[in-house]
Length: 165
Image (tube, rainbow, N blue to C red; front, side):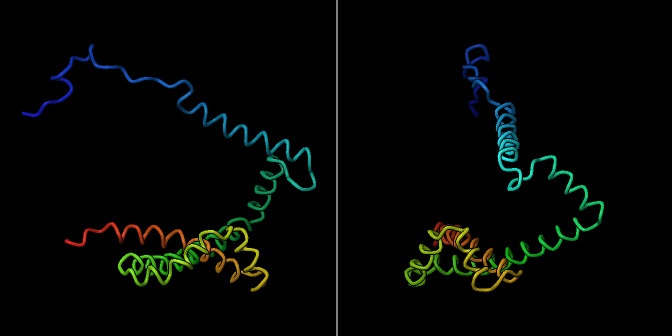
């Protein structure tokens, strides 16, 4: 016979869950409102540099009405998805090889450490400077940005696989 909490202690004797002050949606809402406030203040402090939330919404609405917003969003989505697909292929292959083989892990470990420590924004700057301000540079930078994280996740997953299975 299984023993559960109901048979061991009646409901009146079980400790009640402790409610934390502020837990729930209010702190999350306060966080988003503080970001919005920071955006408004930044736009007021530097109006030529940072557009305000209302200006941004007006621009988005205008671009949608002109019929160009969806097209631009679709092109951006294609770039991201293509970079993600290439990054997944490279990252899964390299991570699986590193997780399965100590030699491959030793060979690629230095490269992995270097790519994990390079600031991500720097990769985009270098890609634009070397390949030009075009879609290819963006996709290459995205691939180089996501591959190291995928390699680490897959490598650690491959290492965790029970060899006796």
